[in-house]
Image (cartoon, rainbow, N blue to C red):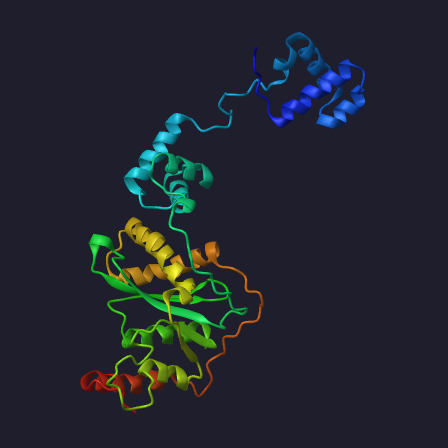
Length: 335
């Protein structure tokens, strides 16, 4: 006995010539049932009478698609990925293959090739996320998450450094980036001033419990319990909120992981090895990142407030710089 395997569509197509041949179905009704013309119904009927059910099975079964990319092309792409983009994700690798090598192929096609070659692990095969994401804020500027990401951004071409990241909670847009040597109060002063001059004052910044943002020393018995950075924001009427866990500020944590993938590789492709040169690249990178990953807020209102006449950033940050020197020398947060 011969067993014939058919798809659901092929079973439907088999039923049509049987019913037409037995007179239970007219040719006109058959055309509407399987969406082909009268001539095709007669051809299907003729094939069925000559070959039986085998005639209904598609002749393309088991054959490669006419649109399939060739094996040589596939191996060429994978060789390039192994040589230059072995630690790139499929989306970024596809972008670079198109931009730098003129090799255009779909992201999903490249993803499957990389999975088959052992160059990529599917998301569902990785460790599952166990933390429920916190809902986004509604408006741009309502809450801006800030963090310092210490990493070998320049790989072995330069020193380990820190990237200060400012990301809007409502839109996932990178609002400001800055390479610095270490995550210090002085560097946050400078980066935050640049942020305020570019965008205005957000309602609040959201950070971790780093000593820049919160007094963690048990010996800090004097003063008002605010760090120098906190005082600067207070003078500008900007709140500072500290997360209890890294997962609570997941927006910026996930952005850091993406940056440690995309930005590291972009710096490598550009041959950049210094903090100064890296900072020159950041504006273009930031614009491209936001075009790809930024989202529209639920409420179009922008809650950034313009700097007022009384907001003298030089004064706000300059006198607090002197206090920082005193605090560092004495180990106390002074008034």
